[in-house]
Image (cartoon, rainbow over all chains, first blue to last red; front, side):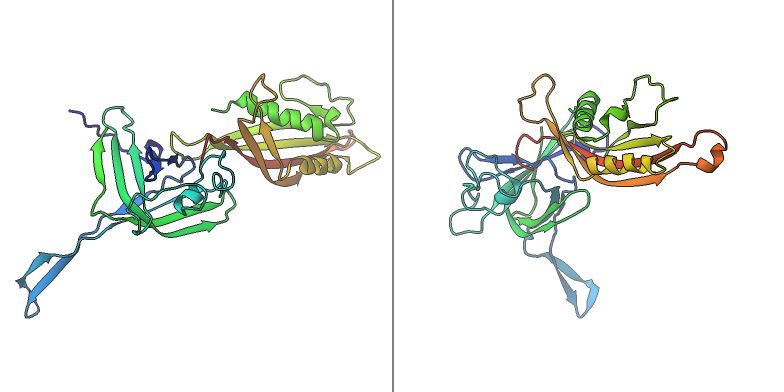
Length: 168
Length: 153
């Protein structure tokens, strides 16, 4: 049985962002806070019979995209966009800044999206897992100053009802 | 991973070059007779504290550095304060590069970033009675030590 019952925590995770290039440009978020959060919502239509739940029924509602967020310590905002020889930076990738050649994972004309890949290593080394969020678009990107470190906070949605999870 | 030796060497080298009273420094691990010294400074890195982070994240932790400034200079009752003020000016808000061992021309493998200093006068001259008055001022600083990231954030 390749299942481990050890609890996982932020130390076990790794977040990688990929774009739609071939091969994709990827960026490992090495200073993220370990606060990746996602919510898979399910919509339901409640049909009540003259206001009564007991006599009513439910139906499946519209699909709901996955809401996700994470934050990271901020080092350099622009890298490749300022100098093609410099490594790609988190801010410019999430913002699709001109000059850094980040390509959307969605078709031209659609909203710009990326792929987020979250890997959770099993501390026992038995059953790591990979969670892939496709077509992730940005809803907000908040930059804030702080005593310990400045932060970039991303909130967005993956245009799918649930991320795909696989064992690695 | 950054090692304690690399960080200590970087800080001590910087101190040696920048601190105006570097000759008065008593380094940890050395034996020095202070019985006749008019003034001296002991430089200690007291604590190394890591915070929660991913295994794959860059090495990052806090250190606490303390400079103990001593003086027996009867002619200058603020001599220890002078040492302390110089220590604060030397380290506060400074960023020190950590070089790779044996490769002085290579890019830094990390940095030490000092925050604000805190000074405490712990001299107790009135308790020393007839003995030589000993002034002591402690300069405490915390710093973030961060390894250089290969790419991105």
